[in-house]
Image (cartoon, rainbow, N blue to C red; front, side, top):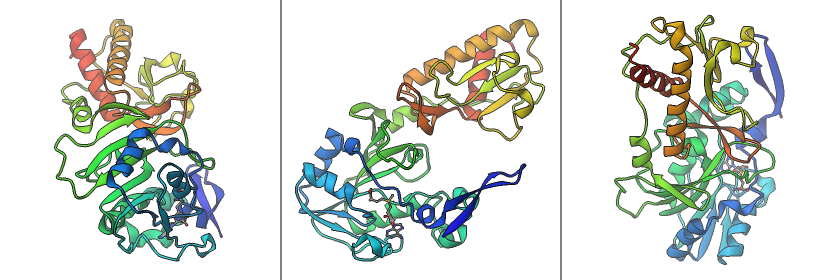
Length: 343
Ligand SMILES: C[S@@+](CC[C@H](N)C(=O)[O-])C[C@H]1O[C@@H](n2cnc3c(N)ncnc32)[C@H](O)[C@@H]1O
């Protein structure tokens, strides 16, 4: 079954995609890098008799886990060709005792389902959540106390409740071969009391900080200075996404330095924009750009990049590409202006 994915509204361009693969999220886990030592410890400490994947697909994830932690395997899938017992696990997952759920559920955000032309087949799932993986986590938590799930990294900055999450591990190496969605591994234990500082965030095997500590490093604009984003004639350009070339990271710059045709910068773009600050004298432009880039670099270092949104694919150095949202960009510009004493 094919569907038409919207590529460009303005040019009315579409691309044909596999509707079943998209709406069922049929992307199989191929590489075992997701099973970091602390993730394996999480499973071992629960001493399960069963490893259980309610979205089992070809079962590779289960078999990877079983190689490190021998246990009985149980799987379910909505697709009967997978040879697991058929079950709609986005509606209900049969509970199992002495099991740890190890899964990689389907991912599909509501807005992507619309853009990809498959919304009608999944619309009923979006009553309470914004993405199918969140519905899957709800159903997993209702069926089992202990869950290990590979989900989109956007979980970290989402409003999905993280009360019982022990840790979240960002995977820079892509565990899939057919999608470059940035992912993380979440380990949840619903029998644990809420953890006030939130889950520990790891980058691969390395602990970075608790979610609460990362959140406290966020910058918030005061909106005391006129700063106009998406201003086609603005004197400052913001490349808000890391390019694959490591020499072209997120950066503020003079508009002439942007190596992208100005007439192709759309006012709706979240990746590149022109900015105007009416009270900024031309003579202070370079100082502002330098200060803003320095503050951005400090923020990235202090938070190991994690408070910036993940962007698909990695840089040529293998690190996650990131996107700077305009809310944080505004806050960076404000404090940079304050330090230059221009208001
Ligand atoms: C991302 S794949 C992951 C497969 C496997 N867990 C892995 O990691 O290799 C998601 C799987 O969930 C299945 N699936 C999608 N919607 C489902 C539903 N409502 N109930 C059960 N399985 C579903 C798909 O058929 C697919 O096999």
